[in-house]
Length: 241
Image 1 (cartoon, one colour):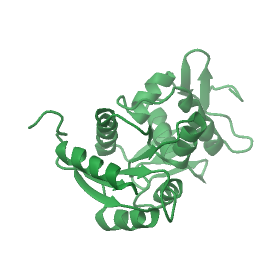
Image 2: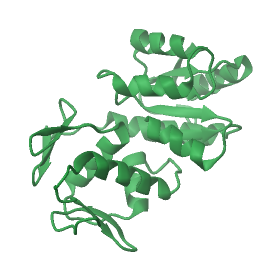
Image 3: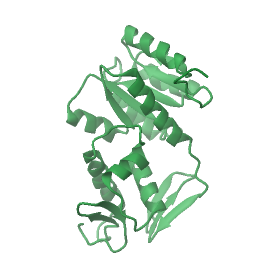
Image 4: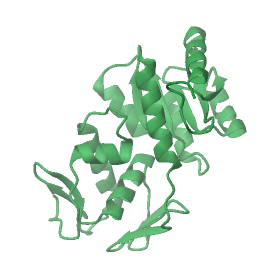
């Protein structure tokens, strides 16, 4: 096997990019690295191709004709069959608030143009490894909080919780290790992947979103903040921690 070729059997990548030279470059390098490649040139075509070919990962440009990459990502996350589809956004927007917006929309990672192909491949492989992991447990629970790993539904005290894909993965990890304290860096590695380089502050954004999703009026906050250490799922978390 040539150096750099991904050992997984020919994952299918959908490249959603309206700049023809960049799309050609991506196809060449991805195929050289052992991927199969499909292409779409606008947001609407991207959604159609996702339904038709069921890719293993999507490389999604932010600025697209017909429908923006942000809206495409939203629709991917709304679909039961695509909610866990790995998505990496490609964009010329370099400001942190744009990165946060992309991640909050549901993207798994955010890569700024121009980018290193080697770095992009490393991020893709990390996402595919995590997406390919199989959970032997069908349900995780702690106190009155339950996560069904088959139906991808979360409940607390009998009420349904509405979680984004990143919050779902974050809660799944915390539920698998209740009362254990994890640093931001450890959570980044576990939830986003060791090959993906994201600011530790991103964890704080998703912890806030997770708290908002799981804590209803009058319910104890089950996510404990440990100053200078990190976060834990803990029934003894002080209110408002």
